[in-house]
Amino acid sequence: MIVVMKRGASAKQLAEVIAKIEADGYAAHLADGDDNTLVGIVGEGRGAFQQAEYEALPGVARVARVTVPYQLASRQMHPRDSIIPLNGKPMGGDNVLVIAGPCSVESRENLLEIAHAIKEAGATALRGGAYKPRTSPYSFQGHGEQALKWLAEAREQTGLPIVTEIMDANLVPLVCDYADVLQVGARNMQNFTLLTAVGQSQHPVLLKRGMSSTIEDLLMAAEYVLAQGNAQVMVCERGIRTFEKHTRNTFDLNAIAVLKALTHLPVIADPSHALGLREYVPQVSLGAVAAGADGLIVEVHSAPDEAWSDGRQSLTFEQFAAMMASVKQVAQAIGRDA
Image (cartoon, rainbow, N blue to C red):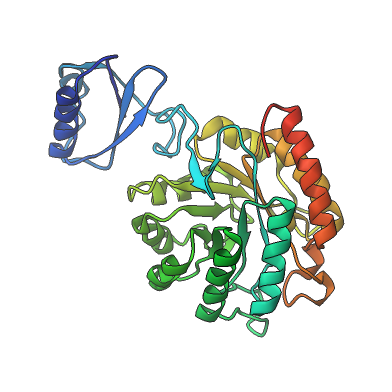
């Protein structure tokens, strides 16, 4: 349910509405509508919801029902785009931001080389895996905290904020000490213990769609983070499993447009994991931007064919720089900045 306050409702009237919501056993979440303050009512409550009692409160214009289960993620609750600052630029709104870097952090020297190259090409943030979920237990699993330290050093040298994957709820405090954005990978999209933990951290979260998950599944996973009072959530389309075998996964371009219509959260596209083939990443990146994506996250490596993980989908420095120039052109063509 959403309580829509009258235009010009006082702070005292708003406080009274929130007090009643909490007294009834619900949680209150504030959002701004076009002309009104909106108060979301979420949770089980202590009894049947008494709509008439809320409508009778001073300053209340009406009470509306949210028709989707992902209340906090929905545009019904939050009509305006949410903006998440990243490196002094807004993720969401008119900008298209690009997060780039290696799949996994291999060494200090290699990471610093990549960080400086993507910064020069115009990237907004540096991605890099310190802890890596791998299909095979024998594949490289990441350098752990040592990699986090190298990422922090790269940030010091370049000014690029760090996006890195979190796999274990117990590691949230440690990763928060180093990272600017916590990435929840596709395999952990419905790890509800982890989602609750990253929500409680109040750190920005980049939530990737599971490879066999629906759009609603993704938004319900985001709801877990939002329900902890953490409004800094970005949702990411990274390809889904279909019958098509020519690419690693199938990039769901439809999801970009649909997510932009359903949710106020920034929508990110990950063409690298969707395709698994670097030669197609630039074209699909442009398609995602044209469809309305607020940002891209792509893999870049100094020597992709020698990368310890996902080298086949990683762009060279030259390919990334060329892609960035094209992204800027497409963004400008649809009235956005990149």
